[in-house]
Length: 250
Length: 250
DNA sequence: GCAGCGGTTGCAACATATGCAACGGAGGGA
DNA sequence: TCCCTCCGTTGCATATGTTGCAACCGCTGC
Image (cartoon, rainbow over all chains, first blue to last red; front, side):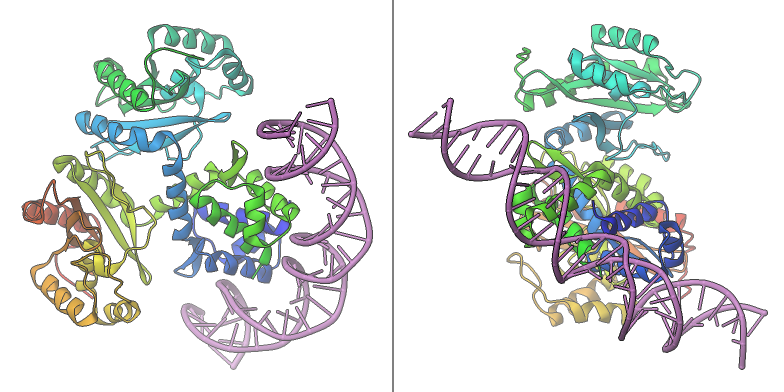
């Protein structure tokens, strides 16, 4: 592994938080200012960094590439128009999460009409035990894959209603698997709740999930549940576009 | 400038196009397979690369960071809710472009309801002479900054209606400056047109522009023009949120 | 005027990235 | 079954490329 590249990537990580001066960067890396300077120059040259009022921050080349990468994900192009329509219909925030290897990642986010925005972010890994999409996916996953996930979970508590242990979580997953949809009742953020439904690929395997999220004050869980038929229809339409005929053939 | 880092960033550029095998990467860089391997390992370790069916591609850490970077841009958080409402209203695609240094960059994109998506991409630099947002910004920019842009333009022709020379472009900008809004009549892509209006900051300086884009077949320019009052109101609202009182104080 | 911050550059020293060759594993054909 | 190719990884000697140093420029504020 390349030390130089590690340092350069570390600089990008620093930029993610906020713009940085060379001095800060050098301090953080534990290298000389000149070394930091040369690394930043390289990043800047490639469009991965740019100067902004006396500091440096992330360049747009990196943003454009990342955007491109998201659009390459198999679920994204198929699901996107469906999600826009869904978000449009109720004005709530719509998320699409995709199962990628041993991770669940937000792939699309259609913001709701309200002034507030959810803290989620495309590219961000999902915490399975406190998110609707995470639960919807895990509940409908095949046994071994689910166990791999469960083995890695640590159940950090975010709010009053957070699930905090494996037994409780397994019970919840069983419930979800039975009824076909998941919900999040303020388990990650006190003031938001959501409902989520899984998406299947041509082989009937769960590959992702779509959720409708809203402020509890604006639309409590009972209200969100009313959108379940629509949400389920949307997921069915996506699955159909992916080639699913309705039968599992694993 | 660091050769090693340059190579690593080059690898990321390769990933942007499509997933790559180690062999391809090594060939492209002109280095030994083992060297490429170690670079990719470093990228993977930091979440900037990930394996996908026998190849490598961009990792999600990079996507999440890029997303974060966009949200740091000053215009984004202020403008976003307005844009969602605007997109919601007509179901057309809405773009926000921001002036950053000597570049105009797409900062937000709210996709329309149709199945087709525009080729634009957040983080992508705008071609000023063939885009509504580019023209709207340039037309309302102060003299020296505008001249800096004009000096760099090469006027590549994209379609029949593309503007192809400085004289023609200056005339168009003058027209736009007078009436306060710009349009793109299939000048970048044959089948899409748009209208655009500039956004001003607290000092009355142009800092960006918002456009409504649609397929010509779906909504020809005459129809889009009908949305100008709404678009202008949206831009005024954003400018107000940025602290603009209505008077220029340069 | 000077001190403190921002960043850059030339140079010598050596840490580190490099290419090589050998290896293990996964397919595909004969 | 064997052989072949393509995938990627690893240990090692080499020398290339990176590093820290110190000097430097330019700006701001005292």
